[in-house]
Length: 251
Image 1 (spheres, one colour):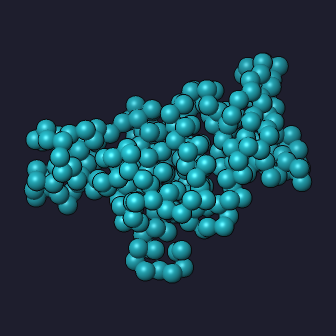
Image 2 (cartoon, helix red, strand yellow):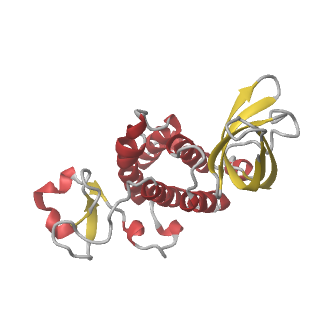
């Protein structure tokens, strides 16, 4: 039993002295566990870093076995993100969400493409945070918890959508929200325009986007597994909030 295709390293954990137990997200095979022999060694360590894009090859005698996984580095996203603490926090949050929410060995190509796009541009200023929000929206959709942002749930209008119902996941127009507005989740404008450049989304809009997707990830994707949002994801939101409040240590 074997397969070989592009994959993203989602997580690594020590297994013995020099091996790693890893989870990768493969384009057509989904989230897949494997044993990277020698992955913690000098030659393997640069490859087996969270967020790296690799050409992966998994081999096992029987399909139900953990199997051995090897990889060739394609894009060193982890090394690139090291230059920017916020980009590194985004990378870790995205990988933790994917590893925790995606079922094992189930193809989710849309989520793979969104995550690969995020990681491919991790070094481009201003793009990582909105790309993370878009990835999380796609992840929710592929898991069956997609939000309906096409029109207002109350009026049917497709204009001036500004909120999302935390109960139904449907958009609500600003004029229709009325006194309910404080109880609704904010809908950042960049999520309504698929062609909008990610670097046009400001920090406040990204924080609102993370609050929106975080609510449904916690309630549905992780709630269905009786698990909390990953620490890396919670930490990113806290970091962004402190940064917006003027905390220079949250840069």
